[in-house]
Length: 119
Image (cartoon, one colour):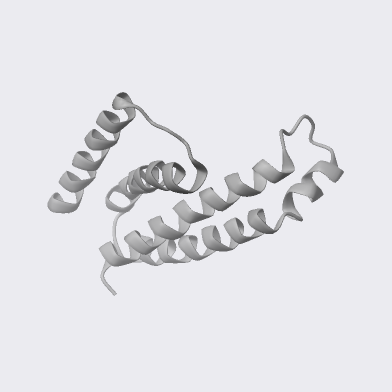
């Protein structure tokens, strides 16, 4: 499997994992302490669990990609996760973003394209 494909899969799973974590934490509510009961409550939430599973799958693809390419090539793909989370949070969480986030995301995407092209 090509490294770019593995990194894209890792990015998708990690991004959806983040969305599920946020959905789960909306149910859990604001965390005010670090008591064991609070932590158990977080991890008993189904959406947090799904997010952990998605993140774990993404991590497997990430590790496979790391076995094939330099860290300096692979690591910038975390920026891809940032971009996808921005889009997913708009559609699934109803979050808004303004002009500055769009410009910033565009610059990040441009940088990622340079890394892929030069890689």
